[in-house]
Length: 202
Image (cartoon, rainbow, N blue to C red):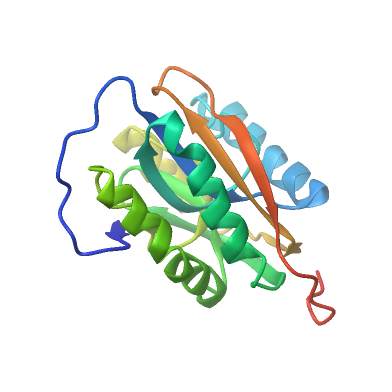
């Protein structure tokens, strides 16, 4: 389930020439390796296409925009991230979206909610340009597999309810990605550094 950053209703439909953007957190290399191992295990066990078509990530927000809006969005995002500190993310075991997906849980949602709330100016700019409100994940997570058939989901949820996953990493940057449509892979647009926080430890 996703919630809007703003209550304002979309004023136009998304058209074919628009880009889909996602702002994400990418785990450290060692955590990415752990997640990749889990994705491979899922595929080998259930012969289901892996959920991850790009590097493992935690989605912060998703929106649509034209490319000529990109410079302004990047400028807004730099301004926001320059005032935010790095923080620690704890990953703890597995959960599911009923009937569709298996994912690794993020233990603390607070830092992600605070970050998403800080992007209200970006959302207002997007909506002011005639696009739907940006959306964010209610429950930050890392997908292992999604779009599962009910039979596979029923088997997998029993399996993963008994499995353990624990890892942590420090979020030092946000990454903006984009694609034209669902048939294309996401491509990197920009990386936004957070302020160093000496108290943040993996």
